[in-house]
Length: 136
Image (tube, rainbow, N blue to C red; front, side, top):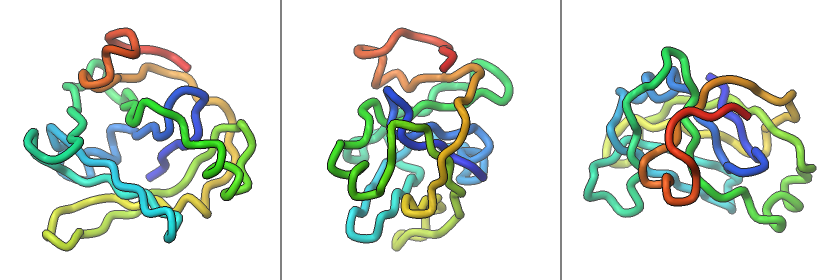
């Protein structure tokens, strides 16, 4: 399952099939572990700290855009990344609370070509980004 990192606007782009694999949650949490160069995304509740809502799918096979800010310049420098888009494989795990999550090792991300298609943006990010589907 491939996720995309380092988009010019968004840090992480998650395809719906990855969210399907963790149980189609209504909310997720994004966790970053810099010492392990690892990103984890897990299902959450609306009450969870920094919960991100997962909107209903607008298009079959659309991609969900998560995390409104791009990775910091320092992190990108540490990873040896350019301004390019990167792809990395997500693997399913269970967290310490036995919830299904997926983990991405950012150090294994590889440069990829630009992606095109419909994107769905979480409602919690609508203040900064227009509603509905976008193409990048």
